[in-house]
Image 1: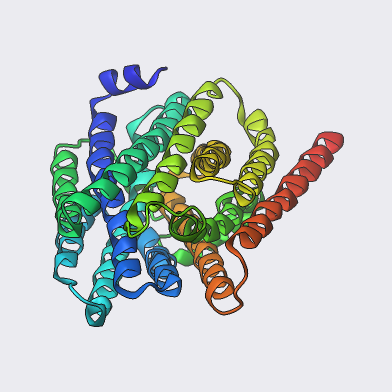
Image 2 (image 1 turned 180 degrees about the horizontal axis):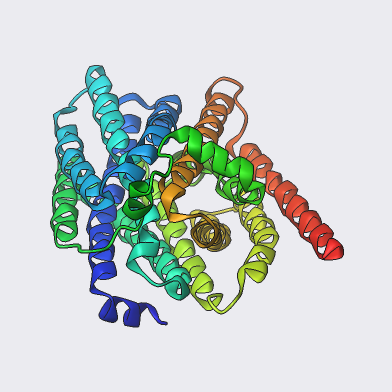
Length: 408
C-alpha cells in the first residue's frame, strides 16, 4: 500500500499522522531556536550538550514508568494529556531572556521531555491497533518520512524565523503545535487491544516486561538496534559545532543558519531512508533482519565523509547519506518489534527501547561535549571516531546472521 492510499483509506491512522505533523514541525522550530539561544547567550558547546542530554535523559529515567502506564490506561488519552502539558511548557521558553535565566530553559525542557516520555511509547505501541499487520512497514515508513520532512522544514524555516523574527516566534509556534496535535487525537477512535489482555489478568508491572524479554531473548537483539545507533547522538552535537565553527557562514551571522542547514540535511536523508523502507515492505521478517548490517555500514561511510568534508554543502551531502541508512535502521527496528511483541507488553517493551536509546544518546553527547571543550579534540576527529564505530555493529550483525543461516 502507498503512503497516500494509507492516509486516504485509514482515517484513524490519518489522525495519528496529522498529530505527528503539527507537533514535530513545532519541535524542530523549537530545537534550532533553543540551541541558538544557548550559543548566542553563552557561546558554550558544553551547555548545548547539556541541553541535548536534558532532551534525552528524562526519557530514559521516566520511560519504564511511562511504559507501564501506557499498558494500563487508554493510550489515546495518555497522548492527549502529554500534548496539553507540552503546549504550556515549551511555549514558556519565551521567558528566557538572559544568560542568568538559562536554568528556566533547562527546567521547562526537562518537564516537556517527561511528557514526551509518556507520549512516544503510547504512540508506537498503539500503531498495530490502528493499521493492519501487513501495512506496518508503510505506516512506520510514513511516520519516519514525516519526521524527516518536519525536520527539514522545521530546521530550515526555524533557523530563518529565528534570524528574521526572533526565537519567541519559534517557541510560541511549538506550543501551538501541541494544541493542534491534541485536537487531532481527540477524534481518534480505535480498539486498544492491550485492554483485553489486561482484563484477563495479564501482568502489568515493569517486572513483567523484563520477564517477557527473558522468555524471548531474540527480542533483546532487536532492542539493541536503536540503542547502538544512539551513539550517533554525539553527531547531533557535532552538527551544531560544524555549523558554527567548522563551516563558518558570513562573519557576524548567528549560528542558527549553519545549524539549520545541517539539521535540514539530516531531514532530507531521513526522507530518503523512509522511502527506502517503504520499498522493503514486501520483505519477510528474515530478510528485514538481513538489512540491518548494511544500514550500520553505509551510515558509517556517511559520517566518515562528513569528517573530511571541505565545505558546508559537501558536509550536508554526507549527512544526507548517513541518515538515509540511519532512518532505514530505525524503521526496521520499530517494525520488527511490532511484529514479534505481544500487545499486552508492547508499551513496556517500547519504553525499554526508548530508555536504552536515550541513555546511550545522552552518554554519547556528554562524551562528545567533554571531548570538544575539555580535551580540545578537533570536531573532525570526533566525527571520524563516531563514524568508524558503526563498522563494529555492522560486522557483529553480519556474523550473527551468517551463523544463524549456517545453523538453520
